Length: 93
Image: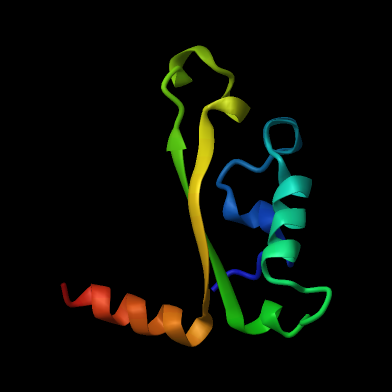
């Protein structure tokens, strides 16, 4: 599992400064994750929970710049244990 706060830039294959930093909403994503996990009250959740975020292309994505093509449509949080069980079950479907 990737630690969302250790180095988010490593999640993206092309993380040169011009492309990655300008086109992303890294600060907003970090803030949303902190709130979703309630890290202010339970910092230990960072070690044993996973955030899933589903994104989709916008209808007019061909007309938009790279940093505006996608929008979040769903998301949820699971414990690492639940995530491992789910991934193990999906493996055999």
